[in-house]
Length: 347
Image (tube, rainbow, N blue to C red; front, side, top):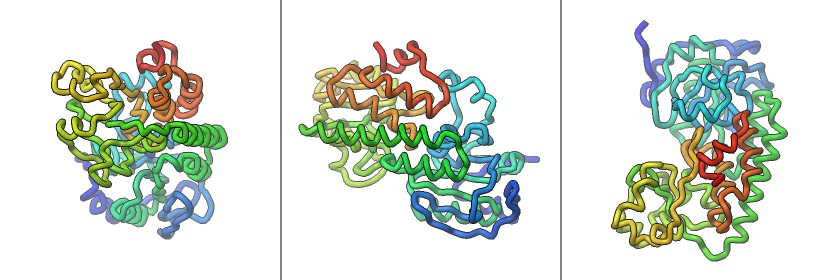
């Protein structure tokens, strides 16, 4: 059989006529329900024993891995060998399937059929495009599709509602940690009264950034700092010029790109930016995935504890205990001291 790939545009056409049965539930009449943070399609009135769960994108993947790693049928985003070093050994046993939504390789239709998927979970902004995709997949596959509001401030509710749906045994502990992180961010935000101006540098040249109300800068906003790119208006990601950065004169520059971090201090033109001049450019951890972005999931809770000491002018390891506890809950493994040093948390 020739491998067929599915992307956003033609995903629906290739699913036409295909159907699967829910494990232990029988075929369901596709219905749309909006309950709290989760908009569901084709979900039965009460839960079923989902045992073949597929994450439609990287953000949902992190939530599912924290809640029910044993029932995931594979990764939606490719992992590097370096990333796997920050996950339990068994994480390498899960195949890479690709995603429905987001950047990267598209999922193979045959792979979903072969894995007998009985629940699809997606997470992010519930735009009309994503809602339409979810409804069609559910209707044509007769498989429930749960679309979750992915805003970081709602992390605790995401854990509770999705955890209940998939019958996770980790709901209570992870919900508590998520609540604690969001409450902590609010405390830090209240303490930061002098308007720290932050520029988030994405990409090797550092000239891509998150705009106002972007999911990519939620951690910055929750902690009470000012995103310089808010001046460009509301949106997702945008390209800027170095002249604009020079005009903004951020107090702090944050990046997850190692190449940018390695070159920013070597480029003469960047030396005129206040944050560079005062050595206030910080590399934020991005293993096994980004801590403040990429993907925009509950992995960003770690970013709260990674960014807070930077904004508070404390040592980078000031909240290392909180980081350790949360990391363990998200990824089911502990960070070693050497890994903390590698990530820049310990010195």
